[in-house]
Length: 297
Image (cartoon, rainbow, N blue to C red; front, side):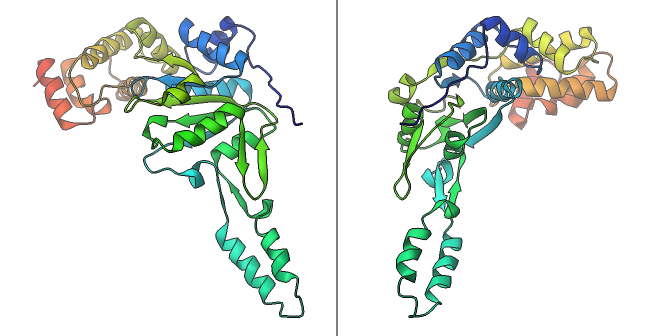
């Protein structure tokens, strides 16, 4: 019977914090603890929270420090098994069949041989889930925005996350030889099934507080003066307190910091805010509301 190898990446929660910091990802204790436990127990980690708080970035950071390949399944409405798991290369199969049948009646075994041949490894197109299961090198499997996938696809995820094995009828059961580090992200646009949640550890990531966001800016845009960074963070947190269609993400805070640096801004004054607000707000109604509430209109 095939044995699945599990090789943990981290030895302690503190090591998680230290190693992720080398990639520029500043994890708090709760996040680091969840990552450590998911790694040590070999369980998938389900991360929920608003868009733009660093859910996907966390999986990239883990892959980087582990020297692992990041295999990403981007979920969307209508995604099916063929896009998530595998499909057959139909064009290549047809060419193979045509080649075999063109050999003529003198080769009476051609068709029987071809039927077995066209459902072999040569014609299999691996998609992210099967790719991650079959890899023998360190792997981080990211199932991104799982809440966007249809409910039906959760059955497939359950099979993969339960046994880290999938069944291809023509080839049999394919089981993982090395356990991947699995991260599922969700923006909570719909409730994931209880069965799926039971197989995962759970982590909620919210927008960082002002102190952590200043540290993130200092790490990602060290050239920006601390006083300007502090002003930026205060404004961003005010914006996040408004009833906007889309709240500014951490990535957009970083973009805003780089924008101010590129403009040579020495202060985040009213004029600068008005001129650069499009970096963090992407809807006209949000612009109008922000300008009015900030009294910049």
